[in-house]
Length: 150
Image 1 (tube, rainbow, N blue to C red):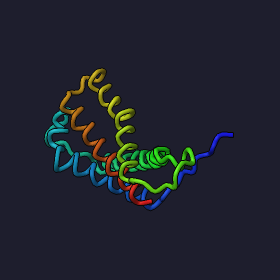
Image 2 (image 1 turned 30 degrees about the vertical axis):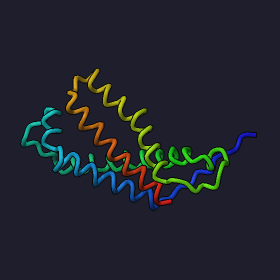
Image 3 (image 1 turned 60 degrees about the vertical axis):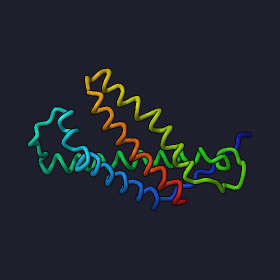
C-alpha cells in the first residue's frame, strides 16, 4: 500500500509569505522597475488607475498570491523525503527545500508563461526579463518563508 505523505501547513507562514510577495511586488513594479515596466507594457507615462481598478487589481493579486503560496507550501513538503517517502526524521536544510520548490515552480510554471508572452503576445524580452525575475524573487521569498518557518 502506498505511503500517504504528511503535508505540514503553517497558516502563519502562508500569511507572511503572501504579505511578503505583495511587498516585493509593490517594490518590483513600483520604485524599482515601475516606469520601465509601464513603458514596455505600452502604458502612457501619466497613466493612473481609478480607485476601483486599483482595488480590483489588489484583490486579484492577493488571491493569486494566496493560491501560489498555498500550492507552493504543498510542493515544498513534497521535496522533504520524510513527508513523502517516510525517510529520515525531517531534520535537514530547510532553506534547500524552499530554494528547490521555488526554483522548480518558477522554471516549470512561471518562466514558460512569460516566454509564451514573448512568442505569442509580441511582448519584449526586456518585459520578459522584468516579469520572470520578479516572479523568481517573489517565489524565492515565499519558498524561504515557508521552509524556514515551519
